[in-house]
Structures are given as structure tokens and as C-alpha cells.
Length: 448
Image (tube, rainbow, N blue to C red; front, side):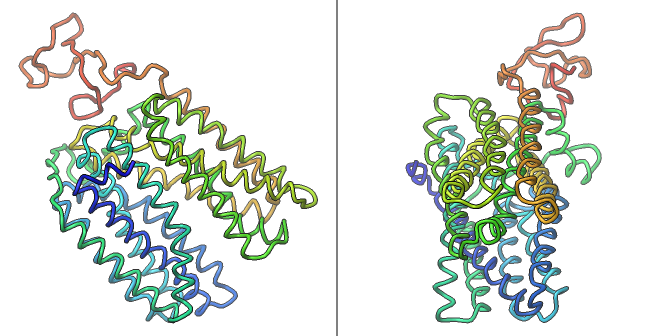
């Protein structure tokens, strides 16, 4: 897998991702301590609101990344977002009111909503070979998993010698390092796409692409399945460990570590598996694992606590991590296959926005249900959501899904450049090629 790092441009971009992740990981710890410093016992609602603001920024501003990527040089855009995030991080130690935290969190996440999909869209162009790209996706998934383990440990070490406010300086240094690594390499230029309707059409194209492409609709359903299962981990782990099992705070890290270990293991084996098994089969099998394991959480958390139930919970957390990773990691391949090169920024921006919309639904649902009805009921409800989403994905994603599709053009005039080599037929001009939704193809052939 590490062979993909022989590509200098990707090596620098991957390093930029790693240092940025470490920096933002430090900010997560520091922000929690800052909220407690200002709000005391009310820090929980402050952080909950900050999380909601993050998701709203991602959902609302993600599509704007496609518009900016078509008009601003990619390297300047990525570095600029890093600089903005670094500036926000340096401002956070000086806030004295809760509303200031929320305002700066929105600014920070708005920049991330532009940076992340633009970064994601750059990788398939830097690595056109599918095997290299698959390895890159796995490395990226591993970077997220390792960061979730490494950053808290690093923050704990730093807090032994400095105040938590200095952690924000570490965040800024990581983001500046990311910006320097981005500008150290040349990135492929984006060919501007002219669409009728102006800026609004550019921002909406990615959503239209997902709506019109069967495998992308299935991908969004699978994102919902992952969000349904993952929400119980990210929202309820503390409650389950401390209240249900009565274990110490260190057990929270153990449970989250089990989730991360499962995700990491899946990312390690996926490149080899994807050489022999299709994206669809792997993602759907993993998708059906998600509701099964989530439903098992109800057994682990119901009734009196026991040692075997604690072991079952750790297995469930690891299973959710592994299955979620097996769904999410190949997702970039599905997006790449479903969009023209010039439309990749719009496609990844839409995927970023829509997938976080799923988390915006499941995060509060997991919290409210657990508080009102208990964790076992929450697990059953979220498992039901995941199961319905995966079943919908299996229906929407055709079992036979070739890249080259024969189709008929009825709306293009004779002599149109796209019709070179097409054969006139009774209903229009017939030809076949690697099919994606674009200005010449508004509908999927099966729906035409």
C-alpha cells in the first residue's frame, strides 16, 4: 500500500492531510477545555451546538466548493482555506463568550467545507491509475483512524507542560504546514465548465448528478446506513461506558479504540480485496453488516451489565468501524467512476454535503433517543434506519453496472461534436461510451 507514496505530488498531499488532521485533532481537545472554562457545567450543550454548526456548515457550504474550484486555482484555494483555518485557530484562545466560540467554529468549518471536497477531487486526477487511487483512499481512511487515536494522546502529553490554549497554536502550525505542503507541488488545472444558469447551476450540478446516477443514489443511501450505525458510537459511547457499564473514563478510550481498530483493519485489507471483488458487492455486504451489529448493541446494553456484554460491546464497536470503513473507503472510486474529470469537484462537493446531511439527522436522533428511551431502543431504531438504507441501496444500484452504456440521443442536432461516430436510428443517434451525467446526458439510459 505504501508504494503509492512514490508519487511525489500525492506524497506531499498525504503529508498535508496528516499534519492538518493532527492539528484539528488538537483543536478538538482544546475546544472542549475552552468550552468548560467558559461555560462550566453547561459545556456539553455548547459543544453539542458547535457540532451542529459544523454539520450545518458542511451541508450548506459544501456545494460552494465546486463553484470556487472552477474559478480559483486549486492550489491557491486549498492553501487559502488552510490559512483561514489557522487564523481562526489562533483567535480561539482569546474568546470570552459562548457566541464567539460558535461564530469561530462556523468560520473554521466553512473553510473545511471548501477544503475537503476540493482536496478529495484532486487525488483521482493526481493518481489516474485505479490501483494507486484505491491505495490512496485506504491510506486516507487510515490517517483519519490513526489521528483519532494519536491526537488525544499528543494533547494529553502537551497538557503536562503547557496550557490548553497553546494547543490552538499547534493547530495553527499543523494547518500552516498543510498549506506549505500543498503549494510545494503542482496540481492539475481544472478545466472550467460552462453551464447555463450561472453560479447556482454550478453549485446544484453535483446534487443533480447524484439524483440522476443510480450508483450515486445508492452511495448516498449507504452513507445514511453508516451514519445510522456510526452515530451510536460517536454520540453514546460515553453514556454506555460510564452509565450502563459503570466503567472508568479510560474505558471510553478503549471502546473508541475498538471502533478505530476495526476501521483501520478494514482499510488495510481493502486494496487487495477490491482487486477481486466489485465495489458494489463489498459495499453492500458491509452495509448489511452495519444494522446487524448495531442491533446487537441492544443486547450488549440491555439488562444487567456483565463481562460478556462488555466484550460484546467492544466487538460491536469494532464491527461498526470495520463495516463503515468498508463502505466509505471505496466511495471515492464510485464517485470517480460516475463523473467526468471536469465535474469531479462538483461530484465530491455534493457527496461531502449530502453525506454530512445524513449525520445531521442521525447525530441528534441518537442523543435524544438515548436520553428519552434508553440505549437499547436507540440501537434498534438506528439499526432499522441502517437496514432500510442498505436495502434501498441494493435496489437502486443495478447488479449489472457496466461503465460503457449504449444510448440514444434525441435532443442533439446532427453534426454535434458529441455525435461523431454515432449511428442514425429511428429514434435519434445511437452510440455507446463510458456514460456519466453531463450537459449532453441529462438522464440515465435506463430512465430515458
